[in-house]
Length: 87
Image (cartoon, rainbow, N blue to C red):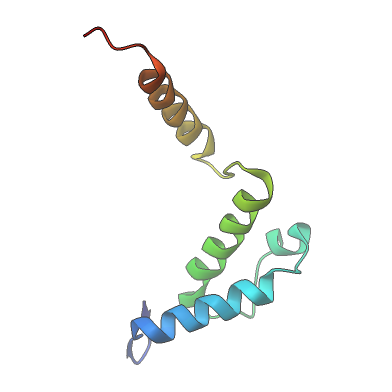
């Protein structure tokens, strides 16, 4: 992750990510969707990832513009894997 004064070290990124996930854990979804105007722009992707992960863990599904495409691709893959092989 890049910061204004240079690259963030992986250890620092993991720690920040963990703390951000913990902070967002109790945040209601409606509030989270309202945005984070006080959050620095370089942390927005991290916040989005934490919220998407939380949504997936709670509901077992993705959300967003590409969610349906991802679901279709996963369904097609599972369908191919479940087909009997013609050995």
